[in-house]
Image 1 (cartoon, rainbow, N blue to C red):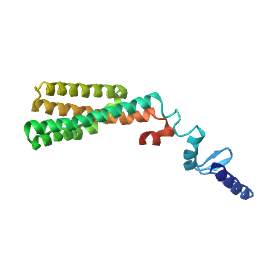
Image 2 (image 1 turned 135 degrees about the horizontal axis):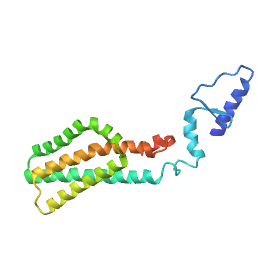
Image 3 (image 1 turned 60 degrees about the vertical axis):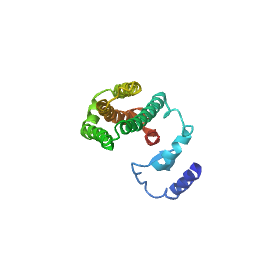
Image 4 (image 1 turned 90 degrees about the horizontal axis):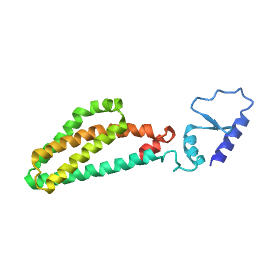
Length: 193
């Protein structure tokens, strides 16, 4: 595909050689004497570098961030299902489940506009680590209290607040850290994973 495309461009350039040279638009590139559009450069460039799964994107930091995000997301989902079931099982109140959701949404709504700018001023790696540690400690305490049958509704509401607080700061830190880790050439592929 690439050779035929380059050959057709060279042929067109040879036919128009008698005309005065026209300045190329800034969004066109020349690769090995072949005029190509950025679309073709982005499609063909990874093939020239050794395939789509080259080591430039799949570095140690990127893999660790993906694994950490996966574990954190799975833990958040397990917590939300388990705590919702526990609240309904112990109290029989669906309104209390609504209050827990409202606490999470309220924290997200109030702190999200500020959390991004706060995270930008801090070391993103440490924000990720600290928020994950805080959330894991909260989940461990909730699990131990539930196992010992000492878990109560105010404790669950406090845990919901702390979990939402951790998520509000974790999300922008993870998103912006991806931008720092992923090479600019592979940004679209890296963000789509």
